Image (cartoon, rainbow over all chains, first blue to last red; front, side, top):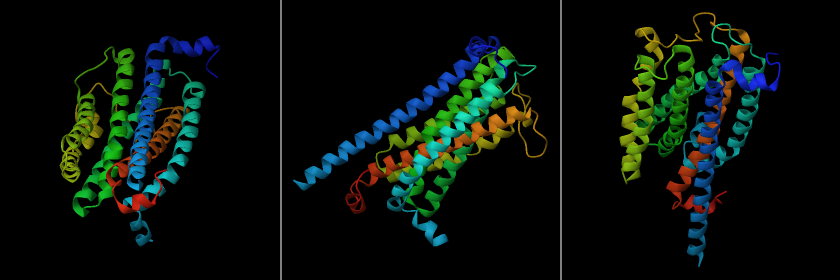
Length: 57
Length: 244
C-alpha cells in the first residue's frame, strides 16, 4: 500500500494536477462518447418509428 | 466455417450479432478497467525517478496503442471495402474512426500532462509527438471528407483512399523513437527484450490496454448498428426487424 491517507492519494506526491488532469479528461471523453452514441440511437429510433407509423397510415 | 463467417459480412446478419455482443464487451471493459485502475492507482508503487507522475502511463500507453491499432483496423476495412465492395466494411471503418480519434486525442492530452513535469514542457515538435498529431488530423480528415460528400458510396471510397494512404503514418509513429532523436522515451514493452518496468506497473498497464480494447470493440459495435440503421432504413430486411 502506497497511500497513508486519502489526502495523500489525492495529492499524488505533488503531481495531482497532471495525474488527475489526465484521468478526469479521459473519463469525460468516454462519458461524452457514450452520451453521443446514446442520443444518436435515440434520434434514430424516433425517426424510424415515425416513418414506420406514417407508412402504415 | 468460412461460409458461416461470411454470412456476417452482410449488415442484416451483423446487426443483431453486434447488438448481442456489445453488452458483453462493455461489461468486460468495465471489469478490466476497474482492476486496471485499482492496480495502477492503488497497488503499483511510486516510481523512484518520476514519483507519482508516472501513473499517467496507465492511460497514456493504452490510449496511444489503441490510436495506432484502431487506425490500422480502420484502414484494413477500407481496403476490404475498396477491393471487395462490401458495404459492412465501410460501415465498420466509419464506426471505428471517432473512437480512434478520441484515443489519439487522449494519447496527446495525457502525454502533454506527463511531459510538463518530466520534460519541463507541454509540447515539443519532435518526431513522436508530431506524427501522433498527424494521426489525429488523419482521423479528423477521414471523418470530414466522408461528411463532405453527399453520395454515401462515393464518400466511402474517397475516405477509404485517404485512410489507406495515411496508414503509412502508423509505422512512422511506432518507429519514430528509434529512427530519430526524440525527447520521447523508447518503447516500454517490446517482444525482443524484457520490459523496462516493474511487474506490477506492467500488469496494470496491460490490463488497462485490454480494457481499452474491449471498450473500443463495444463502442464500435454500437456505432456500427447506428450506421446500419441510418443507411439501410429503407431496406426490406430492416422493416422486418424491429429497430431495437
